[in-house]
Image (cartoon, rainbow, N blue to C red; front, side, top):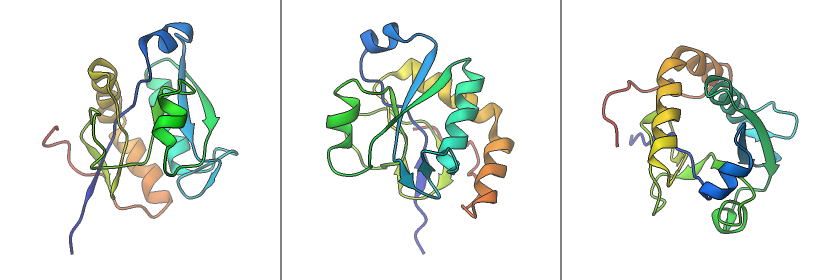
Length: 148
């Protein structure tokens, strides 16, 4: 059985968008995709985004956008958000953090500094994130071994 790893990453749209909202982590998430995310914040990705936002001292604000073909182009590249979670691991043109749960999806980024900040937050909150994932029946976190 092949086990693919999720890597955490963040996709930053532009430095200008980040400068316009310096105290926000603008997250693109699917409004109705449990157990991942929903508008009521009941998904494990909602909870992980909250952990990262809290650690980075950023308020999390969602842009609800169904995950599917064109989400990067239409939501992220259009400047509607800074972060997207649950992108396929082979997605081109992004910077990834190390894996944080087993799956075929990743967070992605083009901003190495933001990736490093989020990776550090993931490392600091590894146990809390593990508990969140376990509560949804998601395979446990991987060790923080190899960084992409």
